[in-house]
Length: 203
Picture 1 (cartoon, rainbow, N blue to C red):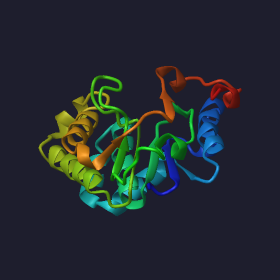
Picture 2: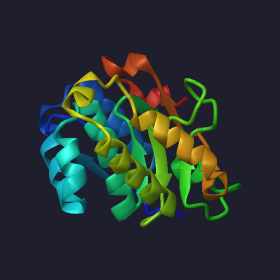
Picture 3: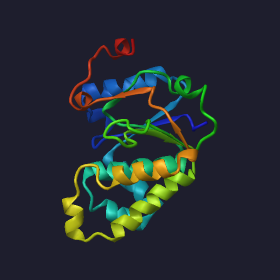
Picture 4: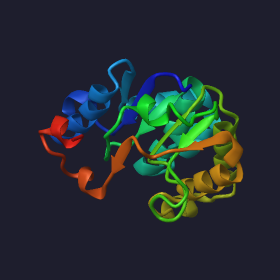
């Protein structure tokens, strides 16, 4: 089983988050009371990536905030394990309840193939500590960044290349992955608002 840690991140320190984002966080805490919740802001993200690999961190600094978060979530899950959840994803079912019947010790848990944009989305996923597949994704990121010049870094689209590489490698290593997206709801609407009556949302 994945370590009982839920990871989330945003640019701001927790105290400065708007209420709707704190409400999103509460859905994860409420439905998973025996899991540890760890919120990491932008400053701490950078420190963690640098401690993991100085070369990767040098590329990290050239990337936009969305790309930085894509790197950090993999670094963190590789080093600690647990479940990562985007700040525009809400928990609708306890994580353990969602996976207890079919999980067979896979190294990673991801959304179903075809969930959003036809691939495997990196908005919500889990892994064991020192997962081979997570390490493979991180190493592939580094090799990809090594081929870029400064202009290429500036021209990257939202979610590229990280989402594409993530999806590709996950699908190439299906035997190491448990596919499940029953425990969360991911929506563009949650980027700017989420209801205060979040406890009722799960019903």
